[in-house]
Structures are given as C-alpha cells and as structure tokens.
Length: 317
Image 1: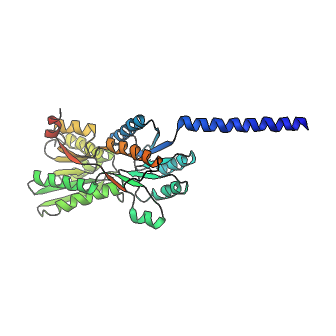
Image 2 (image 1 turned 45 degrees about the horizontal axis):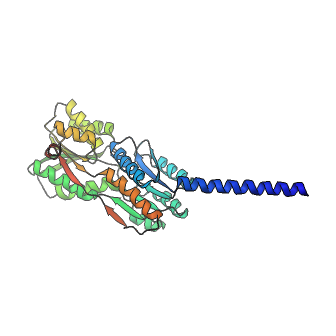
Image 3 (image 1 turned 90 degrees about the vertical axis):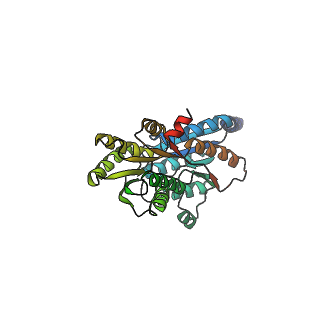
C-alpha cells in the first residue's frame, strides 16, 4: 500500500512539474502572432515581412512568418494556416492568395477563437458573410484609386490618344481586379485611347516577359503598358529591350519595389504606384498586439498610395 502511495505521490509531482514548466514556457515565449504572406519570392512581400519584424522587435512580440513559394499557390497557403492553427497561435495575419479561397481557413481560425487580420488583399465580403466568417480588420491601400492614378498618368502622357496594353493580375482576385477597374474607369473616358490587349501574367516576371512579347508582336503600335504589379512590368521591360523598343513604350507598374525604382531612375520604366508594404506589415503587428490586449480596433485601416516617378526619386536622394 505504501509503495502505491509513493507512486501516486511521485506521479503528482511529475504532473505538477510538467504543468509548471508549460506555464513557464508560455510566460517566457508569450503570445504568438502569425503572418502568412502570399510569397517571399517577391520584394513587395519581403518589405512587408521587414516592417512586421521591426514592429515585433519593438513590442517584444513573438512573430511567425510563413509563405508559399508562389503567389498563385492557394492550397499551400491554406495548409500553412491550418498547421499554424494547430500550433495554437494567438492572432492570424494573412495576405490572401485568393479572395474567396481563403474563407475556409478564416472560418477554421474563427472556430479556434483566433482573431484574423487581413492585409493587402481584401476578402470577398459577400462570400465571407454568407459563410458566417469574420475578420477583425483589413489593412491596406485603395487598389481602385491606385488603378485610377495609373490611368490618369498614362492618359496625360499619351495626350489622350494611342494604343494601350494591360498585364493583369490573377483574375477573380480582389487586388488585381480593383486596380484594373480603377484603370478602366479613367481610360474608358478617352475614345482615342484604345486598349488593344489585356491579359494575365499571374503577377510573375517571367510571364510578364512572355505575355508582353506576344502582345508586341500582335500589336506593334502599343504606346503604353499598365502592369498591375512591378514584377510583370519588369518582365515586360526585358521584352521591350529585346525588341529594341526601349523608350518607345511607356510602362507603368504597381508597388514601387526596389528593382522598379532602379528601372525608373534608369529610364526604362516611367512610373509605379507605391503602396508601402512595410507600413502594412508594421500595422498588422501593431494591431495584433491590440487584439491580444482585448482592445477594440477599426474595421478598416488605410495605408496611403502615391505615384513614384523619376522626379520623385531624384528629389528624395
């Protein structure tokens, strides 16, 4: 009987020790915020990562950052989120690879009582409400207004006439669709500006090269290109250079990443719409901490946009 009591006593001590160690680890590690990006192969999202990491260091907050290899890999992003939910993260921040496709992952986070912050790309609101899913806030810029900025800039440069091409993002994804819609809202006001080709290059540089190379062959009189992100624009610039048309075609990108800024200074790209992804990353972590403190946060948090041109870059040097 005595030996049984000893065994029970030792077992209780072990259980108590394990529980104490778990509590100590939690106190040491603190709450965890996850940031799931579309990819880390794009400098835009690398800037977002940098902003988030800098803010996490300031706030002494545990930050986990993961991403799929390609922006179009929605399934991989879903797997990443599901795995993070299993590890009991405290807040989920995500840049959705698909505005509708991300919703099942959001619902899983909701069921696990993990608050969700969406940044950069909006979730389809109608589909989210129909599914019963909820997010705490959206952090990002106005992609529609960015498209309008690009349209106005091209219309002015072309003196309201000429052939224009568009490299789209992934069809059905809010980010690219809104940029496209804003661009059309301006350009469609000018009957002498004709959009001769509008095709997706899936946000990727190599596809931007291939798709625009084919566009130039089909429409040799293209005078301007609007690419819905800089990666596609940079690919198109390579195709333009190969065709010996550098300086003949105005190229407007979107995101104002480092390589695009260099191309603008060099004169191979005319301009790019800047979104400030580093600020988005910083705000995501900042508002995640507020949620951890059970503070109320706004449903929408806006990040400014502006047009980056050679004059702007030279004046800031």
